[in-house]
Length: 184
Image (tube, rainbow, N blue to C red; front, side):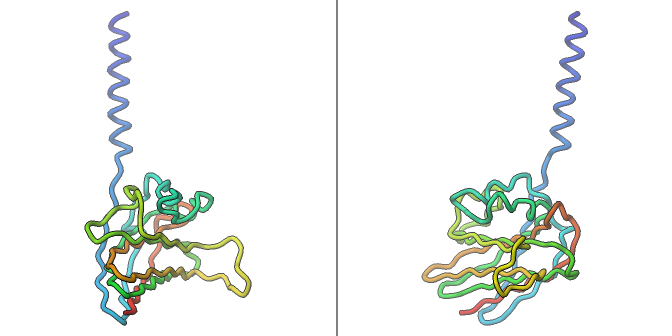
């Protein structure tokens, strides 16, 4: 009887170790984008270079309010992250254009202090968070497009802006162009 219990215990411990190693998550990398005032910087990217985030709960936290949980499916694919600087008295416009118009990509970003880059899943609060994704219902006068856009502004302080491109509905492959325009 003791041998049987010991065998079960060993199988259980080995099983936990195996499951733990399978579920180990790779943290996303963040690419820095340099921008110059009154110009547009262009970056070519691919969802293949991103990772699926373990949780999206940070996005609908009241401290971030990036997008509601009802829109989570639009951010379940790979995430590719970028960071740039937003100087005082400036506006950044971020535009995402998929290489293929049928590729369903979503765009989000958040403005944080200049000290360090905070990954989405570690984001407890931010200055502001914005998102753009395919809408189920269009606004009056709006036409459906695969282009996504968001804006950030700074008045007296400079900030970091973390920009995320995500695949909708578990999409992990898709090429895109990201345009970041800085107006000072």
